[in-house]
Length: 330
Image 1 (cartoon, rainbow, N blue to C red):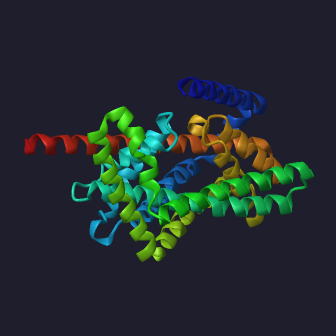
Image 2 (image 1 turned 60 degrees about the vertical axis):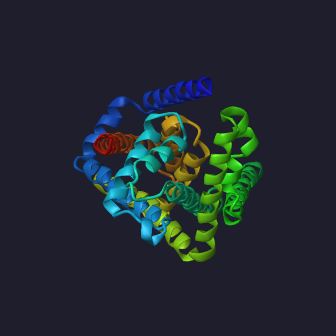
Image 3 (image 1 turned 180 degrees about the horizontal axis):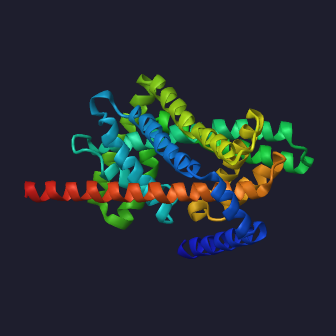
């Protein structure tokens, strides 16, 4: 796995360097200077998007255990930072978020909320992917083979998400992840029994959520979608500060196509190189200068670095506070 990540990073870095050389550093610098204060505005919008994502996660808790919004926003940022700086896909960030929640939130509730929130965010990705593929097929002339491949890949993605949803509704998610016999071989029978008991509690909470609060799931999906859609606002401001007038249809095409390509490259750490290539392809398909896609991606890179820094600071602060509480209790 480490070798796979190392190869992915190397290939991504090579692709990134090749794209910069192809466009030309001088042109990128000139266009970046034209953005001016727009860079700050675009970066700031991501903070709003993270806050809306946090609202979506908050709907996945039982009402009695919902942390205050700001107190939940900090673990969300910390988890996003861990996802950005470590090769763990989204798993590492989810673990961090769970460990940094307030002490009054039971562990089973934290785990259940994270699983439900992951489903909610993935459903939002499906909705945006469906819109992106529909717009791509309608607006861009593609060979039949490419069209079929895109539709098949999207169908498989949707089937996977549907299976994830079905397993959650039946209360079998944690039991599948924590299969008792497999854990017993690694950790021993006593620990396997304990983990199996906790898994049953988590599954019970998840199943109860789907049975009793389906509207909370809908609200969470809509909030995640609204947060993701702020990317269109960032793109519109990017063109505005550059003085490049574009229509709503063009904005939608660039945003949605780039997002679909991003999702297809989730295994590449930080989507290095792929994020840049995706936006260049999206710009070209929309009839725009591909170099604008590279510049926009570089602005997004700056945004990611800034908010990763904020997230790591939040992680350090929350971890230190938790450590002080443990020392006081002992």
